[in-house]
Length: 391
View 1 (cartoon, rainbow, N blue to C red):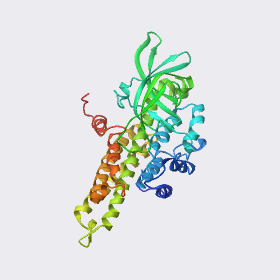
View 2 (cartoon, one colour; view 1 turned 120 degrees about the horizontal axis):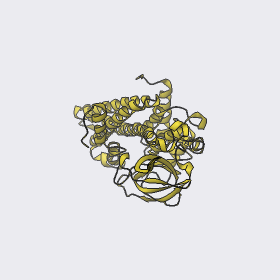
View 3 (cartoon, rainbow, N blue to C red; view 1 turned 180 degrees about the vertical axis):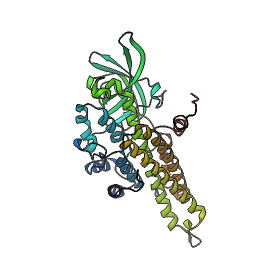
View 4 (cartoon, one colour; view 1 turned 120 degrees about the vertical axis):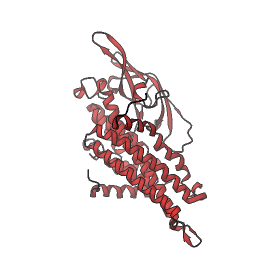
């Protein structure tokens, strides 16, 4: 992996930054989404044959980072093109690709992602949303929480589990993951908005699935034999982790962009704010913490680029480690950068005029979601260092 960005990537950064700066911190989310879609930025990772840019998560992470650095990150970029677009591209049937990918690419169709449950969090081994066959249909029952943008999404990619069947023993009682495309207005698919302290354009929802009836083609990848075992009931776990690595990379981009925005505001203020005839940025007590925040963000960006490169190169195992590390590093760097930015501005850092106070809460998202920093440390200690599990 080259640590020097290609001219194409630099051009993409400049173009997206220009778009973000036109819309700014107080942007209209729908207007920005539509323009980004028309310009092709939402679908840079979608194959060209479906109207996308034919690139990868590397390019999509650049889009999100630069929009975040301009103060207008689009959270659904993490969900719709990165997770759902990737899963459908890699595992969907031809019909599913034709139905969803062109709209995801140009932003005219959006898909949410439902994995988190009240009693399981993101632990796929404890997911209780189950799917059972009823003739050729499927019936889904379960609950999901903290699902972003369900109200503006055309469908939600729901992670459930099916009962395994043995030819000799019948139903084994064991459950295995599977993914279903559930349109927003499907009967039995209900949502309740969660009242959040976090102020964001995308709302959070609790979902209830009460015997939601879906046709056979709602199962991502179709039947067990689709694409040599890469679709349907036989590949739910592969599909799930194919989407989780991009999710972590994009969450890192989200955090890095937010941190860069906060840092840029603080640096601008430190240059201009004068006390005793000296800009406050001349004092090391102000300058050094801001320099450290910049270093931490740059280090996180390098790990994010490594993770995106490995994923785009098809190294899912290597990308898993790097994506978790990138998400961890970006979350820590984002929280510290925002905190230092607010502290640099003093009382002004808490005013609406400067627009930093709301980032104090938003920055915590990069530490908490989609997986907590502690679970990432568990992953690294077990998978990378080979230490025993405590659970």
